[in-house]
Image 1 (cartoon, rainbow, N blue to C red):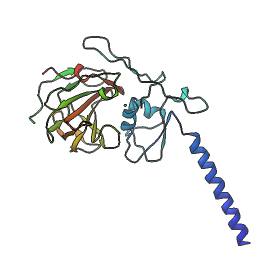
Image 2 (cartoon, helix red, strand yellow):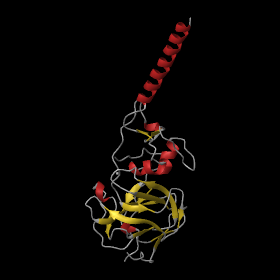
Image 3 (cartoon, rainbow, N blue to C red):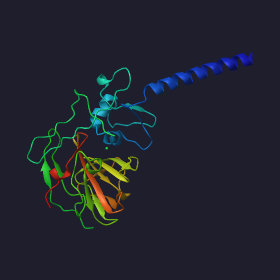
Image 4 (tube, rainbow, N blue to C red):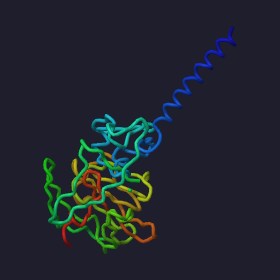
Length: 257
């Protein structure tokens, strides 16, 4: 009798495990993402070149945009998904030019794109109004020689590299909230991402150490990290600005120096 009950229970458990396995397998593949312990909604959106607001909306996630390990997220607009997970599109390579037309951003009614990418800083700022957001006053994240220019076609140049000294202070380029502080994004090392408003995010990569934690509010010019070394072992900061999830040329927004 006990053997019969044990056998029946075992059969039920195995059946449930099989169903769970099938369910998990059906969600794997391009267009889906399994959340890791080090992830935040913002870091996932950053990794795939998405607007974090779109990513939240597609997955029914409201503010403060909390996710948990093991959760599966759709990376493309649900209406565009066929029976099987959809294939991710290539990233938009257009960027704004100073004084030119604005970069076309991903709207919620169109399929998005996804992509598998020592002294105090100058006080001079340049303002940019992005309604309905508040004015963003930009400043340089650190002092140093510019090592490269922005390129939308080169994954390693989706921002600018600034040379300096190991341990040199890195500053927030504008007021904002730290939405990522960690090492979970490949190719960025010790990374900090700051949200300035619903349109703009900035990122500071290859830090020797991070001085802020996720959820902290920072003011423009606040010291948030110490400079480390890049892939070539040269002391430098890799800096990016993202507009609605898309990399844009930081030199179009930072003040002249």
